[in-house]
Length: 175
Image 1 (cartoon, rainbow, N blue to C red):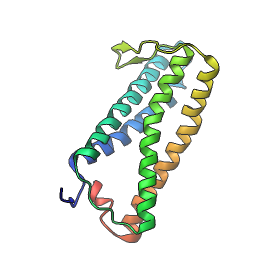
Image 2: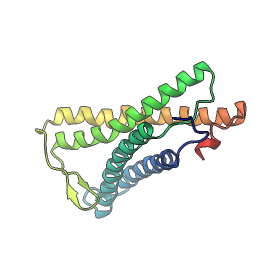
Image 3: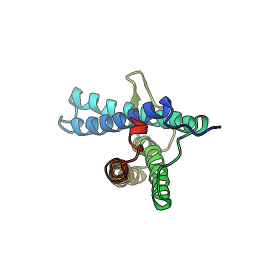
Image 4: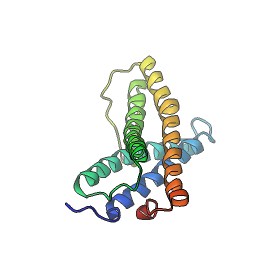
């Protein structure tokens, strides 16, 4: 398999879709807080958050398929940059996988329904355990969210470093 000069369109599309979905999930959870409990709008934004989170999970599966199926361009990086890039990307994948799983787990453990796509509810597959639900909520809302924001900042900073300091094609290859 030859090394391409740029990312495959599937990689590019899923990269930017992932960003759009993360922003949408964040906006939905923030907007749902603007409405009182019981308000239909609060429930609508909450449902959007769940649906987008689940879509992120599906998008991650497609991204992993794309990584296995299509060659990636060679890294334009020093050895330490290559190591940092691989670590940040690996951690981003892990956090993006863990966010929807802990979100669904938190709701399952709390015995709450999780409706997706305005079409169906996830079946209850775990025993209710509110103590464990609180721990999953902390992991989802505090730990993983903070980790995601930190990794995104590092990722963007790396892309901007390559573009403005190293003046290479790293950023252009993903646009």
